[in-house]
Image 1 (spheres, rainbow over the protein chains, first blue to last red):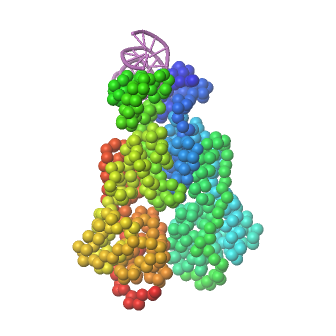
Image 2: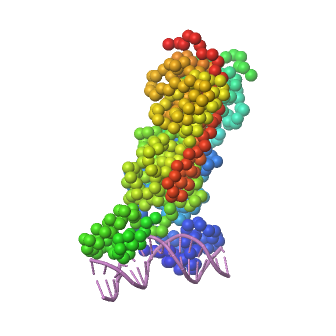
Length: 299
Length: 299
DNA sequence: CTGAAAGCGCTTACAG
DNA sequence: CTGAAAGCGCTTACAG
């Protein structure tokens, strides 16, 4: 078994320096840290892992970002799954904790940001970026877009506005291509508070991100537009958010419970993979057939 | 923390004897073994794997109970605080886990049920029962009741209905006594779905528990009563729940962030104590001055 | 059958 | 930014 002392000898530093380097409890010069990391890798050092359970760490959004609505359900599900498989689930580990290698895998819950490089496998939950080599669990955003478009087209909508943040998102492409194939005109707008969401006179509005639904609804309210009589609204978001909006919103999304289980499963499998969950569309009060756009739009 | 040395002292034998007795690596006289086992039980000894961080375990509500709305914020705050104090926060430990798992303290988030007896200190979060000798963190329910009553009386309400589950709750007493002192008539009802919440013709309604707010509002809706025009509604619940109800609800409660911090603090202090947090009353859209009760109540 | 003592891998105040 | 050294809880060869 490789010990701390072996690593120290190999790296030409003292025991304590290695210890501190791995725990992150005090700062180490880049040079020294590099040598230690090399030695750890070369010697295959593992801190007394034998006696413990496998441990998964969860990196949560900080206190500044209010955690997403579905965080509670997600965590309950993840912890249930972890218990089933007899692994420990450590909450709120910093990036440091992973380098200490006290942890076998790291699950990063968006909008928390993953550490630059981690010495253990990382699973990202709900992060749209695709150009990283971490594992991912997320709703299949492209499929969700297609489902939205199909649902609205079936209701008879032909002019739809899509509010989003990032035009390069999968959801955007899934929605736009399906909508066009179904004969819908799609107008897209990057959302910002105060924007007129019905500027393009759509009969339906699709909100691509979780956050601004409340804002969008209140913009509509200020223009005296009733949902869904004057305009249908649907969103890509969790059921938690959708069902508690001022008007219950028809939504697509993955169940947070399923996300939680999948995240733990992937973390335990050790393999690098992307698991896109089947989106579920839940019809609520905010959508209906288009009923003729009022000719005189207030404001 | 109980160590091998403590057990040895208590049993009147040497360190090594205890070590061998527990590992079974050499034979021990029945007599000695008996004394050691007794001491282990009495002192609640649990072997440390190696020198590790203090570890707090969180017992969450199971998947059946959907976790409370505020669970996410609570956990983010608890994990932030735990990180600050450099302790590990283990998620979803079972009652078993407290003895098998080497945990220094257990935080039980209502409605999860605490283990019958735990070998480590237990902190209960949001549990109204008072007849247990565990530590507790909760909003000061009696004070919350008083705040509600005072707020409604100041608005001019004189007939108030209180919907609750358990008439023995502190909130109930705080509310009822303050209301009476302020000249309000209080009618109380144990809530069940389908109940007419305005049977007693109150001008304001107070909902004591977190869950039934949606149900109560829909009962009012079915009777064509508008909130707050026909009847004011307020609740003891989290801001998360209150602000997302169909009508934003005036509420009293503790911030989940504060609960999370306090729970970790108490767990780390090791002392048995009850920490009741100052309730905060947030006025939202659901309350106003009474405006004369309609003489003909639909239904 | 038991204990005193050396030693394990690791952490951390302390000193520079 | 780093190291020498004391200390942690625990194990185990050694001696009786």
